[in-house]
Image (cartoon, rainbow, N blue to C red; front, side, top):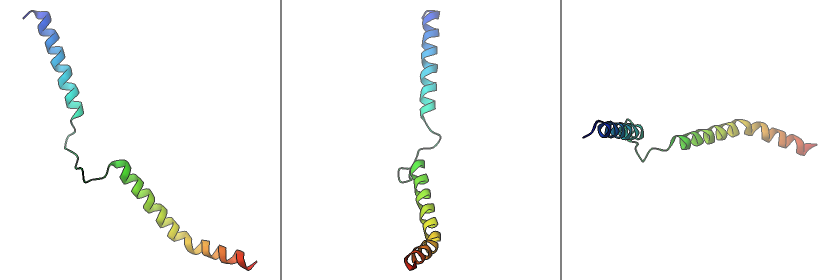
Length: 69
């Protein structure tokens, strides 16, 4: 092989190895686990429900007070 062909082949192999290494994660993802965005949405929903439970007595008090007027 000519030196130019060897250099071109080496560049091509190095580029393809780097690209495939960037695509491969450290450990494979389990499909039964939710994605990160889904986990975040779930925690936001839980926080909203908790806040609603905390505010419910105050909202009922206000609603009862406004009907008496």
